Length: 202
Image 1 (cartoon, rainbow, N blue to C red):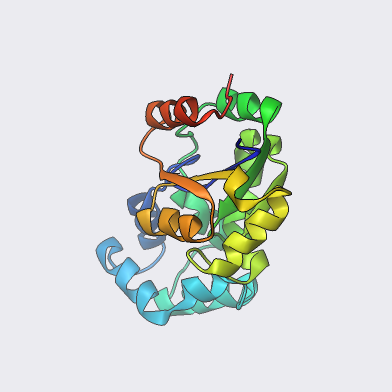
Image 2: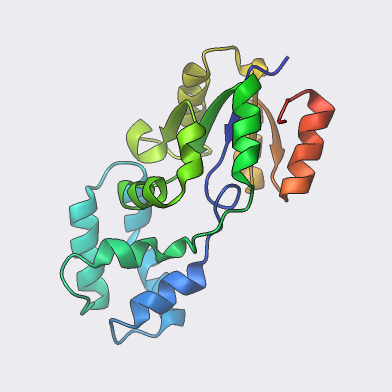
């Protein structure tokens, strides 16, 4: 029996619009939007931020320098969070329904800049019992360490947990940790999975 349901964040609960992010950054620098992701990726800074090995302040300074951003002081966090367009991929009623019957966890590769904004702008996150976040755990999916942290937060055995993520490698990582897991494709698909495995969501 499933005791705890674990959701990924980006690509499952909230959409990720990378083109919007790079377009917003390009408005404040001379680097074309299409070149920005390659320049950022080449630095390796994002994994350091999301695994808690770099403070948000240092990350901000490094990206501002890298792109020679001319944004007003203090605006970088808003620009960096433009990745999230505002709407959700699942209705709040899903979280409300699951929470009535199961412990509810969030398991996400994220960072302090993004998660602060997400909590502020997506009220449905208040339904979760616990957040398991890569920058706090010090490890990112698919590291066994972050799944172990999720199992501990679930307060039940691994096989009594269900996890959904849009990225297949992260689903497989959960399965290797003993967690029942399925890839998220859509709201309709995942509620169908819930019905099949006995997760109550109404």
